[in-house]
Length: 178
Image (cartoon, rainbow, N blue to C red; front, top):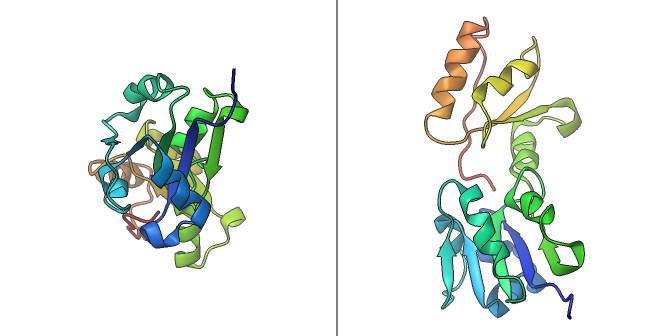
């Protein structure tokens, strides 16, 4: 039984196809199936067999796993191993059956855009988690990068900030970062 990697996870940024290494491009082009978000699928050359992620992604992971042995490429935002689908799949697929091509994380890109040091900032994600996780990071002077789950999350986060006495906080919104 072969243990060659059947699953390839490719992190893709807003620079799209042009930002991928030649090895990552080859992995996308040579895959029997490419799975990703609609936004990511639109960034690659036309592929005859693509599927877009449903929401929530969690409901689709078993389908990805059922493709074991068939060349499958999963596209993910930025660094797929940093709070991404890559980390979830890597817990389910043996290491010798998976290849990972990473890209810059949205966290790294946001910190750079804000002029913040990554180690001196805090990342909180509401993707698949309650917005109340933000509470643990709320201290005067904390620099927080907050990942939103959907279009309702920023409003919930602002309401929580106001409730906790942080209503005058400066908020910068980024979208489609990585």
